[in-house]
Length: 251
Image (cartoon, rainbow, N blue to C red; front, side, top):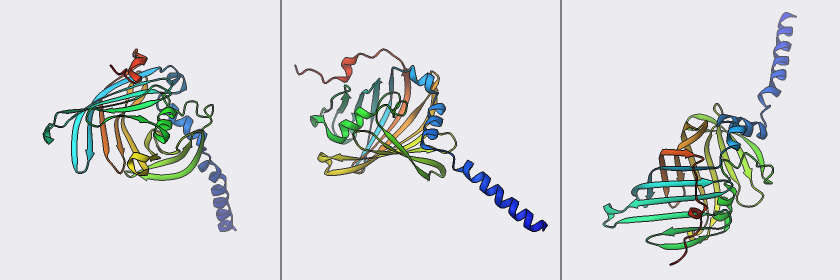
């Protein structure tokens, strides 16, 4: 009788606890992430961000160092300016300037010329609203689905599938303990690269800046290259001239 009671009690406890273990929904993960990086109230006050640091571009077995400046302004304006040192290859400085004014985007390369950014690349940039597209994703028509758990570097992560109203979907990996974003993976159709490529962005080294957490390490990997950025300075809500996001007028 006693053994039977113990066995039944144990089963009842397992059944009672099972719903609690599976209680986390996609919405709850999003809310825990927003709380982890500073909370909705603090994030809603952010209007822009200016960051600077170093970058290493790795392609075809070569590592090219340089400096990087990243500017972002709500709702979805952005600019990344890289100055790469090619002296080890018998050349000078290569400047790569990528801009999005919230409607259009282009990339300028001092050695390869300019090109318009369109298709999946453009839509992905337009969807990357500042400070985070997760802040108002439902209003934007985005859906988010819970896809279970995985591991990155020995740490458990929770995987969400982020599907915007327009543009490519992304898989987002959140640390199961801190709820900070650890990785995002997106498949983009890039005609100049020969078709669909998967881009993986790993973010880490979160630091507190003006009451919100910012990743100071960003590593973006694709079949063509790896871009590793290490920030040294981040300024929140600094005045940013809209002109820096627009394509410069041809003189």
